[in-house]
Length: 154
Image 1: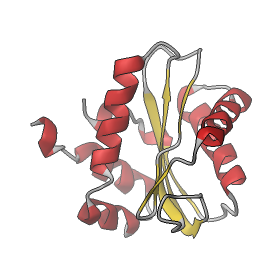
Image 2 (image 1 turned 30 degrees about the vertical axis):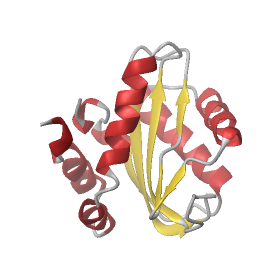
Image 3 (image 1 turned 135 degrees about the vertical axis):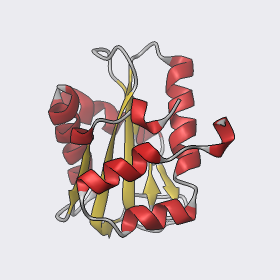
């Protein structure tokens, strides 16, 4: 599995005005609607329910919000780069600015876990994250994300 299978160009966005985690989850829902036609209220509610189990901020400025959505037939993702990092309840207590969200069908156990593992491994690469942080153009970000080849799966 590669990131290009999870993202479309419309699913990548740079956001300058996120002021809170709640607002960011709303923005993710709106982006998922634009890119994949997902219902905003359903996706936001699913993300909020997942966050209530424990924050998905994994550290080093990265968050991986994810949720299961019954209307899905395969795993899809969105990526947001925040120009101004926000508090997200990350494990290291640092604000986040790289947010890769995943939406999976309710019955996509292994597929969802593989996608989550891939995204997690990818965003643990500090040089890769630095490259993302220095590019504010969504088209360039999409290219960087989808060109990344995970050596662990080679």
